[in-house]
Image: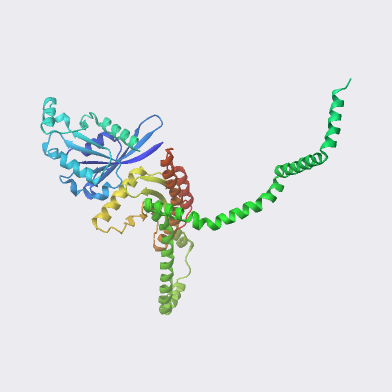
Length: 165
Length: 290
């Protein structure tokens, strides 16, 4: 049996949302129109078992520093959320708590994964120091460049949605 | 020596002397029991005896429904309608849509007749000019046929999520689930950008193709059309969509209520059968002339 779930990918400008998706999804449309209407849609089928799978319809929303500006119409009916920040740029996670409050207000009661991307740009010892310093709670640290932990994020979300269904 | 048989015979004689009436009663009772058995075992005979009683009871029960079950049914219906407002409105939409369309069509017909009467002489003049050029040739008729509107693809899409529920396509196209998502995003963008909450994007045009979008409350139907798509085609297409959607909602509502019941008893909740929906889509749109 295969079900479809709508996932929105949120985060500030240039945190690597599109790159994460591009790494995860191989075939996709051109994303040139993302600039025009502010969203780009791709799909990936994730196998949960040999007989069960989930079709993730990924809504890659244009990055914004003010999450309140996101069009509510794009968030309607969302099943799961991936919030991405850039580990190498503190400005993208300094207000993480406030950002997540906005996300929870706009999309209440939905599974949410917090991702720190671009881990390849920060040395391992500095990485944890920075995250601890800002008391950042996260679910995964990824690198869209090397592909590190990318598959795991989407598989985890697919499993969460499967439990949630 | 007195045999056992003799004892039995003597006992019977003694019984006849002492209880002559009882013996008659016993025979009578056993005959009645046999008759009752016969009636019970014969369905027709039993029905003849029992049916009038059941009919009377049923008739009394039916008459008492407004008083006995009426309040419970009304309360349940109110609760279900309140819980599934969108689905109920969605189910009514095609019916109301048809009624409104009929009314508008009737008004337009009256208006058109008035205009025709006023422009009667121009029409006659046009006819004359047309007759000078002769009737349309076979090539012209063929060209008209080729240019007529044809349904290429139909997508039934959940309105908020953009998730594809079912599709029908004449030819294979790129991923329909992604198309559904993009159409929903474009639709949301346009509707949001113009701040028209109660208005829906109805048509997307690109060169030789048109995408007609018919919105309902919980879902919308996107139909890709090639050829000459004009008002008459739109009118015909809307009729087909309304008929299809009415059938779809009938199935959907059944499942909504079944799911609600299953929630209570903890059984697995059924979801709408995609194959069934796609058959319904094909039956409605495959050979439809618009």
